[in-house]
Length: 146
Image (cartoon, rainbow, N blue to C red; front, side, top):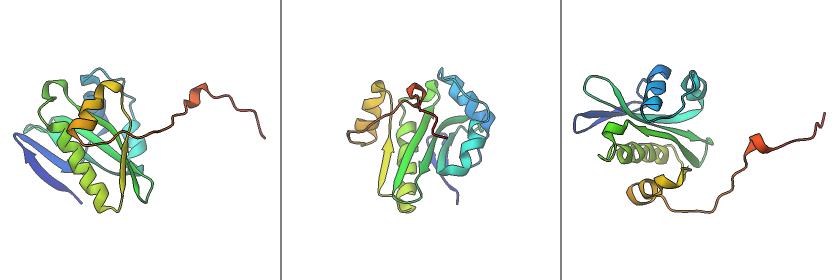
């Protein structure tokens, strides 16, 4: 299932081919710390993803949608190259992801983000604040139960 649409000179597509190397490059473009092999490891667990590509095929934006196989979708790793930000690309990536999650039967889409991205997710994309809990597993110490 692959849907394509245009946004100016960009092509946006649901579940279009994207490589691990392209995601490493995209992550580096905005100062992130990519992990080679990440996409190849998690792709099988995704409901889908949205890509935004320039006319020359360069990956400009990406978002992944994980899910629980039922009614919860999780928006992960929304990325847009810095020189293309604030042009509506991220909002369109999220909108396409949300539509496909709804079509798959999800009732909820959840996202977590750094505080500075609140205007993007709340104002531009329409997410609402909710109480949530977070457990930093690297700080946990578990007794050996074996």
